Image 1: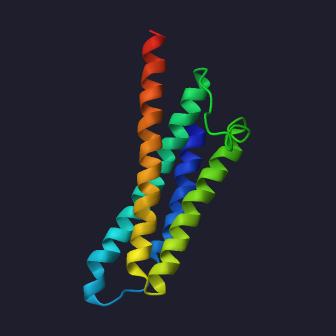
Image 2: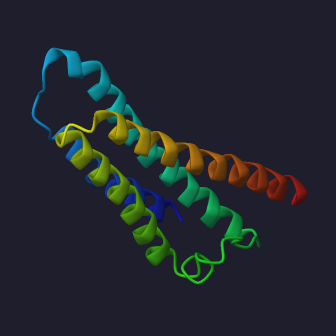
Length: 136
């Protein structure tokens, strides 16, 4: 399991690199750009935690409640790849929006996706904690 987490973090890091590769904009865009970078980093972190907590709960006998992901989580490598793809996609799209001067939309996209995955991560943490407590 730890190997999967390391691979996931590596892949997520590759996906978030496009945000850091942008050219410097005017000084007035720097605070907003810092927000975009922070959102991209938190997106990768949240997705990594979701991946870890999902796989940990499954190893303790849990089940995936998302019907779309049920078949994917049976193969951890495929699950990590899907999560990395989702993360990279949202970061790439927000970066493109930023470069096209749709600054608010770029930040909103990552803020909304981070909010959704944060809710999932909190739920997963609760389930995982309950599962571990019941095994004691």
